[in-house]
Image (cartoon, rainbow, N blue to C red; front, side, top):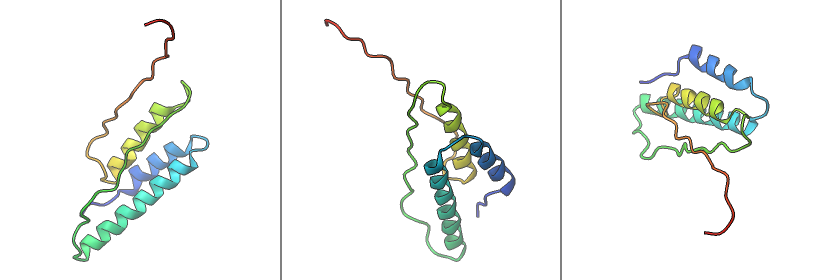
Length: 103
């Protein structure tokens, strides 16, 4: 059964903890970790694995230069460490400024 190695988890949690705020995100990741550990415990006791995976889609929105992409990379590494995702592949969408005028 898959286990969360405490070294990388603590390192990534600390790295995310260096950012101010983000309490909602930090709590969400703690809840995901708790749910994963409970799931693995249930499977280890012979219960069937869950039929559906939790939705892990996230959107980081904000002004340029506020660390959105950096935080997204850290979150992806944490989710990979928790065995929620296989690869730390991110989809980054840049919003271009709107142009007004005649079309």
